[in-house]
Image (cartoon, rainbow, N blue to C red; front, side, top):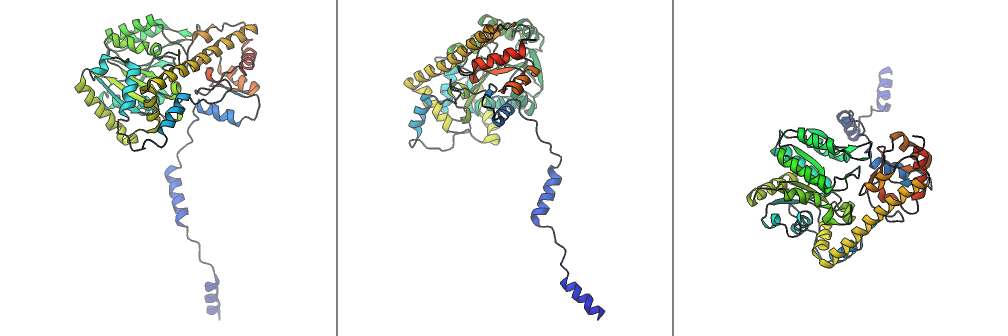
Length: 430
């Protein structure tokens, strides 16, 4: 009977549950990736996240680097709308070549190097379509690492924060050079020239072609000529990041002046172009990377290597934005409309600089705000401390990066007085 009872007990006892395949997979994943910590928030994109989470009706976002109209709304240019109308239902969406749209590249080179550039005619420029300015910088950084593995890159202090990430991830050693002068809120030209002079001959330098990000401080034309001359003496290689051509002054030719000076002086250069700001194509990721070579044969070789770098990275660039750019720049009527619209964006920002400065002066601020109108482009480097920026956010619901960079694109006639009052409150006792 006892044996029978034990047998019955065994029959009624539930078998032990075996771990499911899903549970086993989760356990394995946990052990594989358990050491991965959350990445730090991006200092720029994190500002927008905080702004969106704030329920205050008075909140103001002057952190994002994207243009807004005077109602604080994103803007799609009329020339872009017309280009998209022509594309819709008329053009296919096949893969582009690894190097991208030939037409987009051709028009981009004319914009950067000049409509009638002999360098273009002589086919000395190796160029590929890139994933906006970021992608162009990254392609060049990888090219630099692959073919000049012992080189390093000199980056201005300060610079756009992603520059450091790009060359770091490409494993190119970085050094800094003097650029901004905090006391004057302007250019430290003597410090810059000393650092260029003291760098080893043949060094690579990252230069902002116009509307330096984040400071809005650019060298004068004469200073650019002196910089170019010293680069020539030292045999340095200039790599220009030109994210704001046309958007800075309203004139694409004027904004390309630094590059043209270097070309006149016979430099070989590299250039990253972006159509995010000057055409409002932020999400389309359209840009161009170009490298000026000694001759056509060298340009062919360099372009082939740039394409080889792009192939395992993203295979080929997206087509839609490239079509928009090529249609606008190759059609005289649309290009004329674009030039009018990009000047309109630049003029609005210049006007907001004047309004912010005047409002601060009317409030009796004890500080000088001349730098607001002396600087140019998307950003104003205000000189406010991280603690003052924190007060703007906590007390006035005004959002910007903690280095005091104000995106002038977020300033409107509707909020400029409120912004000036808040800035005055947090800086008047400085």
